[in-house]
Image (cartoon, rainbow over all chains, first blue to last red):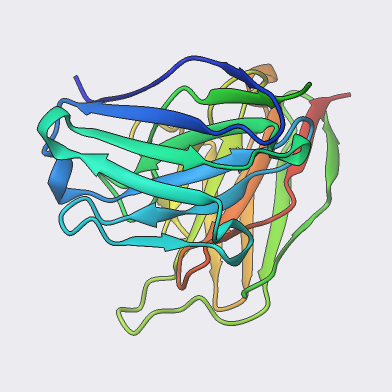
Length: 118
Length: 112
């Protein structure tokens, strides 16, 4: 069964860091990119970027350069999103997704809520 | 960046009636392959987005045939032939021609 399973909700203080995981199963992990999408409360979808799961090369949207880092552990078929120096405006649901069957993101994780609050 | 503009942003619908959502891009999404890098999603309340239409007009697996996508270049339309109550949610288009991929603002579909 094809699946992307994400880690649980996080509550962090401003200035802290958080790492969100996205574990893939049921398909060949290194053959398909992992994309990350953000959704702030009550807002629309925003593309964060993607990582090439074969080479590890990341691409970030301009708004997400610097504090956002994608990484991989192919031995456990898991992708990670790390956000450092957290700000209140980073509060959002972060979702991973992959274009497995089509050119579009057709398999999604369940999303991880990251709340930044003191 | 390619700007995606959806309209309307809110769409009250009557079950059994048709509905249409427009998505326009600031530059052509037509690839040399002849396909348009434009996809449509529905995000139901409390759920992750689900793919409805890919490459402008191809229905994703399991998507009811009342959903259809059309258009090319910069103008695209998602149509629902007969709206059902389960179709409520927010619909998004996204361009995947070039990074950064960009979403439309979303169109909230609700039952009248």
